Image (cartoon, rainbow, N blue to C red; front, side, top):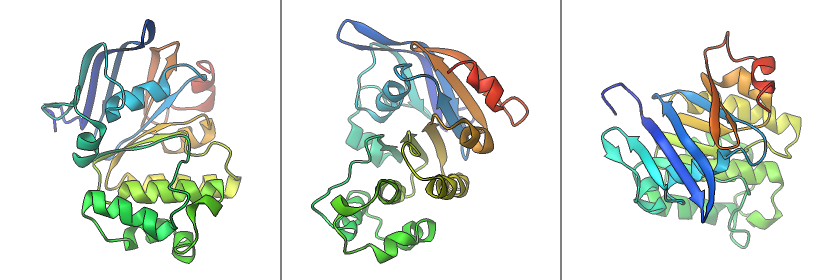
Length: 231
């Protein structure tokens, strides 16, 4: 952890795809057990930010630190091994493998075979262990992806658009799960569902065209109408 207590510090981050610059001087910080949300329109740079932290994109300039360790230039595999796990937006699982086999892959990578913690958060997965992941609903895939990511007890979860296209009952369940997960890990969630964000986030960063337009901290400041003006 850094001297100021942050589990993640992003400082003056600039990221480009070829000639097209996507993030401009982005500053973000995350404390232990904090739920941080990133909101903004499509194309605002939210996914690019998560992918840069997770090691899938190399920044043009700027710093990404966990404690006193720089993440810039490290591979995604190494960063995941340091306890920073990325759950992408596409709900992509190994569809030809069963739920059990998907979890086994997560366990193999992390050395953590305690699936009870996964099925405590997502009891439904217990009944689906022998089902091929390709036959799961969108909500069940999301449960599997988050379940796989929490193996190894990560210190930070980066979760991209977790509730997109999901039924209200699943969204409500995920909301409760995120609150529980924050007792053990910090979370950075990219999310369009403002009522959800405002119910659980300790800090919100609003992005527009690759720039941080606002940082909202605390329940009083984090309200749908405050976030809406940046969407």
